[in-house]
Image (cartoon, rainbow, N blue to C red; front, side, top):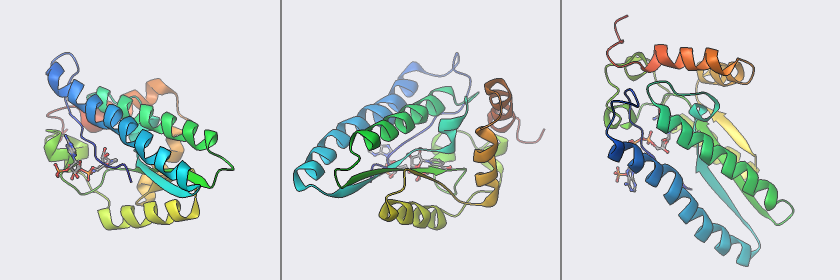
Length: 179
Ligand SMILES: NC(=O)c1ccc[n+]([C@@H]2O[C@H](COP(=O)([O-])OP(=O)(O)OC[C@H]3O[C@@H](n4cnc5c(N)ncnc54)[C@H](OP(=O)(O)O)[C@@H]3O)[C@@H](O)[C@H]2O)c1
């Protein structure tokens, strides 16, 4: 399970470049590094399952969380591509796509003053259970959590990018929690 990941709220032009590059280093580079090693191992065994934590953020441009959402789009695309490469090998790759979940994520990302930071969150135990079940079933991906999260993901599949970016602004703009 490749799960480690961090975000950073705020406007891209104002954020510290170091913080943004650290997101890419952890969410993208380290995920690739570990996937390379884990999948080589699984291939030599001829069987195995890999779960990669992506996000519904992968499906929408993340205004005020731009690098994080882009990192999850990267992870999502990567995992689905490698899954296809490995079809018929006995190895499956599954992406777990949570919505807002009650962990330390939003505090670490300095997003507690945003609507998404203050809003209702899914229970991490439920999200983990759905991820595990999808992994064991060999599914390509699972949107895990509440009906609201699943509805957001379904809407993201059909809405224009500009609409999704504007919706994300309303969830993640710093200092807008009481708007
Ligand atoms: N919470 C959400 O709303 C949400 C939604 C969608 C997807 N996700 C994804 O879920 C995954 C887990 O995040 P979380 O919500 O559980 O947040 P979290 O409580 O902040 O946990 C982050 C995890 O990443 C690890 N980590 C952070 N920096 C690291 C580094 N430099 N090297 C190695 N490990 C590091 C942390 O380990 P330590 O505690 O030891 O530092 C911790 O296990 C992430 O990939 C995140 O993008 C979260």
